[in-house]
Each structure stands twice: as C-alpha cells, then as structure tokens.
Image (cartoon, rainbow, N blue to C red; front, side, top):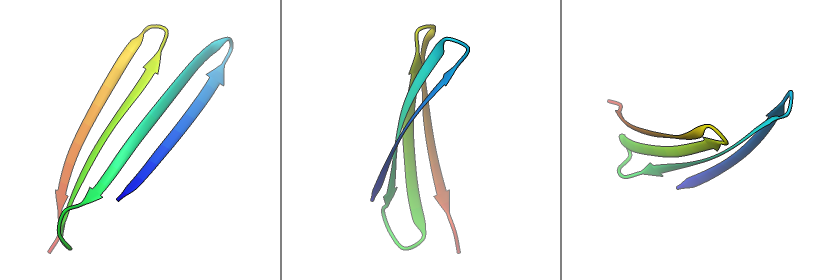
Length: 51
C-alpha cells in the first residue's frame, strides 16, 4: 500500500490532493484519489490487472 499527497498554487488558486494505491494481489492494483479546490472536489478510482 502507498499513500501520496500533493498541493499546488497558480495565480492565486490553490489545490490539494491525496491518493491511495493498494496491491490486492500480485496482479491486481486498486487506486483511489481525491483533489479539491475552492471550486469543488474531484474523485477518482481505478483498477488494473496485469498478467
């Protein structure tokens, strides 16, 4: 499992984000994240499988 955080600023606008990666098996990885600004929040989800 890994967790990432980030932040950014551009011309007076600011944003923050957090993401989580979880290896369920050797081949299956789940990812989830969220980012936010004053304008709103965005959520992401992803699953990947390799063979």
